[in-house]
Image (tube, rainbow, N blue to C red; front, side):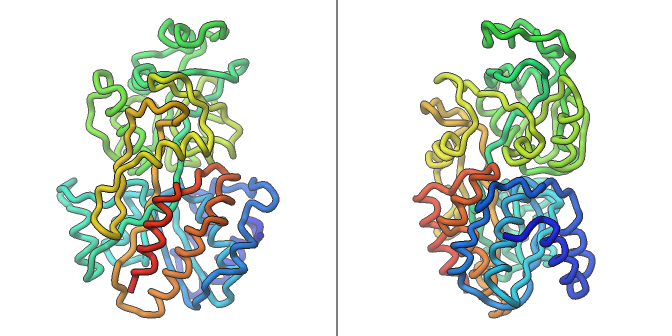
Length: 377
């Protein structure tokens, strides 16, 4: 497995060919820290990879940044002459770049919208750019951690209503009676709660607010959106919010599991009504396995049930989609896209990603993704 440093060198060598995008992909918002356990990259699966030569450029979700860097490393180790650059600018920016025809694929923590939003119907815009239907292919299951820093409090239970009130600034100290009631026996300090949120347009924000709106509708009344509508202090991208909590006693944020682990943050157990559930890959996978496909055919758009009371299911999850054209205009790019996505979705690679804070795709979803990848043309 390449180290993060060697990945940066590889990116820089490609920068001469692809310019500022590659440079940005190597240096922007980098919260990967080489923290994967030995063997975390699926070097075994990479040896079996279907290979093609050329360069792919992608942009978008920071929630999947650590995951996609691992996959790129494994893929490029196995496939000489293949280069994949990924610029982690956030889901909103990635979709805009894809619909503008500036990148080969977008990473987004929300599927393309089919209704008007901010003057744009994302699915229609992407279809027009592609000249064919754009497909949403779920590739990364990223549990969203409610991550906090509070000395002496290693175990914390939160409910949807309490989480919503915290992020709306209605609960402002850690020893508030509402928190104390659901944490009997825990000594909670009177430390002020410091909320940090994503200041950029973020699919993580949209999924977190979907959860709050669905699970605590009487408290969180605002519609879900990529732009934050709660209270707190904004920080740019995943690295910004996770780093802010790491350096702030009493801090709290929402971030993907991977970033919370990288920064050594404590993570709340969430009680949706069936008892508190710790964030684990298995618990997150149970929530995704219950999702319904609302996209047609190979457009695998999923609808998550944020109100689930299934025992042992961690309810705050997101799915990062790789958004691609179903019919490419360049056969070489199609072959390279297929090869890379096959590596990404392979059981070995998906299992390896669990060691760095992601949950493997459920078997049924993975089978649909495999069929869609094979159908790209």
